[in-house]
Length: 103
Image (cartoon, rainbow, N blue to C red):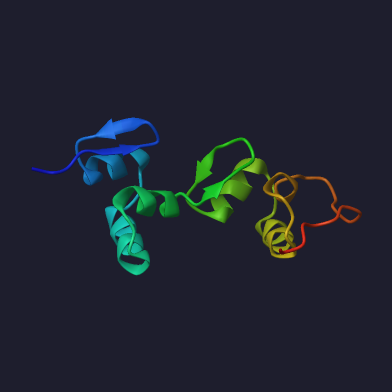
């Protein structure tokens, strides 16, 4: 008998059912479990690691950029400079805005 899984407040009868519902590969979840030595729930969170400032989850940075109509290269550079995700996804210029310094 497969163990139930609760992910983002929704109960699933199996990991496969959860992956099917969220349209993600079960292999990617198992891969995250293996390399990070984490639970199924934590592995699912790692697969959905891209979250915007409004709480939406994306599988990739590119997908998130397309949704917000921001160029991928622009967002990548902004992330590398340490800008907040709200600013990363902004279509405004950030030339005069300070990035967060790494602690």
